[in-house]
Image (cartoon, one colour):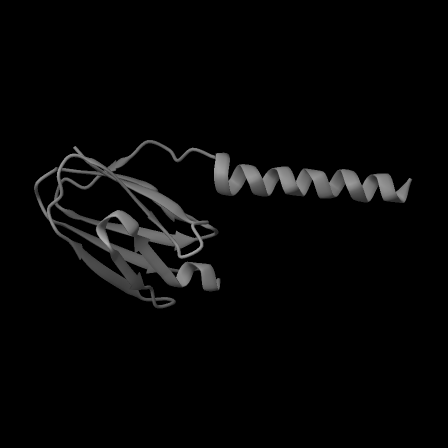
Length: 120
């Protein structure tokens, strides 16, 4: 009986982890009309996780890292070849050059934190 309970709890936790990190879809995007936006890094997510910005204009992203997890210490824009360290409890501003229309993912180094920058 105890083995069955442990297995059921283990499977439920596994399903939650798979959903949280790989299947959950981010909410509607936040518009960065001024070219500046602050992204909070906490509790395993970027908030906001989807950012809409005008194509062809540079953007300034300020990351405020509140999560002490080692996974949260870096943000990577793989398509733009940009990787920056995020200090704990401080804001780190990253200037991104103007980009053509398209979606650009940003993640932590392990790709558990995930976000999308949509140039429209």
